[in-house]
View 1 (cartoon, rainbow, N blue to C red):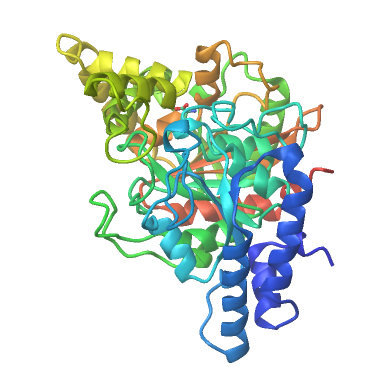
View 2: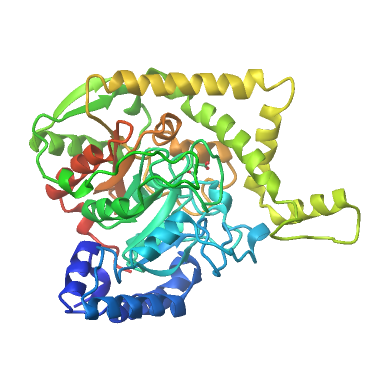
Length: 486
Ligand code: GLN
């Protein structure tokens, strides 16, 4: 049996029946990482020693008959944006190239407490800014389905590592699409929960009013398992929501009878890739076959979403990234000149081009004289985008759209043209502006054999219904079972 082909729920069953041990499975993954990494580059750091120690601890618990969770002994990875105690956390930036956090992010802590085995830290766009993982200060991750293509971004290493079976699941972050878009590009399931559903404590900040963590998995059932382990109030994050976490598995009934699925006309635009459109239209029929009712809805402010996002996100980023000044932690360059000189050189050498572009854009839109015209106006239009969803959800339970306008593009194709790169997130960004949950599930392939993702958006805190719709869709198809032949 190929141990790296199992889902979390399959592995968890085998572990609890003692058919396999966590150490065996962890070794199988470490071997796979070793044999694939020079082609995929999905990891910045691999932690075999820590992983095997955690695996042994999981096996001991199971042997003793101690209480276990569905993640006990399960090998996963996390985006290199989550602080891991005593393990380097770089955010794919030179400025944090040697940063070893003295504490765990809440996400990391919860995974460890659940007994998960952390194999390592995934590559990403620097500070999660990008849609292709080409902005990493380390190297470019490749798409396991086509090595000359990007895995999407910014959580490209997470998506690629799951697609290439270098881990069973991963945790990424999504500020404007960085979980759903790479999930779509790599043919895996990616869930962005409601803003505040999972704690952001210890998750390196990009745009604090948009950032949210979420899982990459091989199927929707695993996505529910991961969300269950990660969701919940955290007093260390003032924006985490203090409300009960439902039992997500209870939503996975396979039946969509009575469910109203909104189809927003603004998301079926002229110029969408024809293969993507065909796959999405076909998947809407599948939802119908499962009992759902398709209803037309409108999200009229969609056309402003990308512009609003690039004002709000860059403004917040310029403020968040002010902390990297060479004083408290991270890179410090030129310790001999003046203090200002040291700041300048540290930031000049520590940040990559895209990060600098965003800091400049954000600083500009927040500056005196421009604030009202840019940041304030963007915040007002953001409310209109949110209101669109509130209105649409009066006539439907979830909304279905393509995740991205195209399948994975070629490495280098959009590097010189940031605007085209920004448009990769045209269908994912509104969800972050509104704070609602969204998932991407594999829904077909282009003629070139590249995966396509179906996005399902839900009401605030209604991850359950999003998972239910995605799961019922998945039950009726087998797109998620196809694997890249790497
Ligand atoms: N691609 C978008 C950006 O570059 C979204 C990134 C994200 O969600 N972290 O900002």
